[in-house]
Length: 524
Image 1 (tube, rainbow, N blue to C red):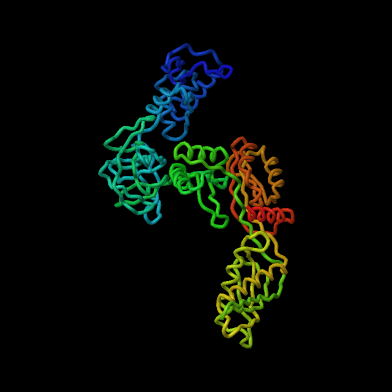
Image 2 (image 1 turned 90 degrees about the horizontal axis):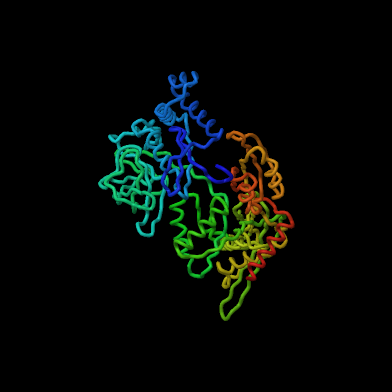
């Protein structure tokens, strides 16, 4: 490289340099550069470490031949001691020929590969020997929805062989289906093939219920290979469909994108009634939005999703709920006295202390049902009420006009009256945050978490070298753009996980904003 311009591609094995003026290699004189000399020496030292004869020759100062370097490189790659790096241009395809040649001469053949460890039907470890004579074991590592071909499942065969007549048994579902058409992919070209042999990568079209990470194997010897380890989605946004009536079209397109990219998650939040799209970050979600438009013809916007707050009470109160209505000949009458108390659980606790027959027992279930319906919408911002204990201790009834509906309504009136007297509060969700970042970014991330009202619980060295782990508790409402901040501060090297922990009282200013936002939404 010279001033950002590529002068040449140097093959350190053959000690030759090439240019690609018209997309074709043209040998030139090796540029005079100390870095090239240093990298050649580093390559010779690396390959010498895997072979005693080469090591002896290296220490004697004798230069290694091209054949010796290739043999040492092949052996090092096979044992995992050497991980070669190749420079090339992905856009112009310059240097790709050297990479392909290197794969041919340095990548180990399947029959020399170490056995893969899989799980059998009972969950025990078993070895998968890389042999064409073994029972089939193949891993689906990628899925694409092609508008012309349909679903394309990319598989790598680790044992056995796939032909059109091979039964396709999915170890995850336990179902067997017919094998689809077999295809090899070369760039944008797709070519039919008679078989996908041992060690090969190929495509099976139109396989139903086969997902990325699934194992395709023989029903005689079901095994589960270790799937693809995908990072967890870290940014969630609410989906706003621009054109009314296209909700199902958006959902269908996102489901197909999820098949292709398992890091994308999409679901409807039953509480907030929002469609929520999750991914690895802003750029990732922007790509999903663009793909929806270009591939499936639907436009969406993204916004920060609503937070699932809760409401509860802090005082005990005793209230009456009385419902009396007369219309024509028949009427409705229900009268209850309920004591509301706070408790530590989430579910409504309903108890009765009615004595003396002031209220028939057959109306008790109606009162409980009325309260169960009432707690779904709290008095402050309309969020569900938790931590509530209701004790029915008195009431009255009319022998003709009293019925279940009347007592359900009376219970809801009691709830409304009681909440106003029991010091209701807003509860916000608190999440347990684990952040992993380079050592030098610890201070910046800790400061950012503090600004988000987070509480740092601990920190220390992570399992990865030169990385730190920070554990904190943070209000989940403050974490909408944290993934963007972390990616920016750590130059993309940081990652995190955030899991719901519990609910706790929201500060007064936060609670007031939640109430105001709820009123605005109700007006809209």
